[in-house]
Amino acid sequence: MEKKHIISLGGQLASGKGAVSEILQRELNFGIYKNGDYFRKLALDMGMDVTSFNVYVINHPEIDRKIEYSAREYAQSHDNFLIDARLGWYAVPESFKVFLKVDIDVAAKRAFNDPNRKKSENFTTIEQQKEDMIKRYKLENERYFELYGVRKEDESNYDLIIDTTNITPEEVAEKIKVEYFKWLNN
Image (cartoon, rainbow, N blue to C red):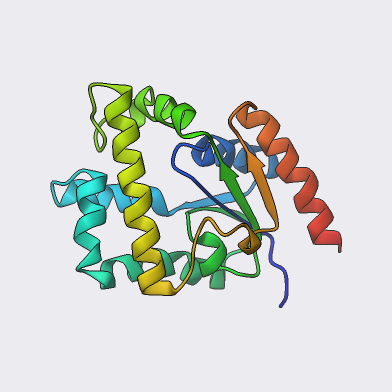
């Protein structure tokens, strides 16, 4: 399989994918493709929060497939970009595949304090945010296994795994760049 100049950035909810992808985009002068933005837009267009939309797409797999395969279609005619998507590694296997993980309590705090999430995830406590994140994680895992036969948390799917719990997005981006250039040159 020929390697492409594409980094697929997957990981757990609020693990820092968005912040890290923006840093990498700027520092590598790459484009960016964000499945999550597309998913959130569809949820809002249908008047749903992201968790309700996760439940909805279980019975509408054509929507899920359209979202997940959109990255594959984009990669067929583009290079030098990042995929910010939980299944980006699956959609574009010739990419450099990165998985970001994070402690659930830290993730819930990050998500709760993220103003960009308030339109589609509006909770009054960090505990509510955490409970919702756990529910979404389970829904996604079941759906991805049912539709694609894959487990996104299976670390053997990735070229690099980073725990972002106690490091900054800048440190994560630097680790990714170092390993990405090693991967390209091997």
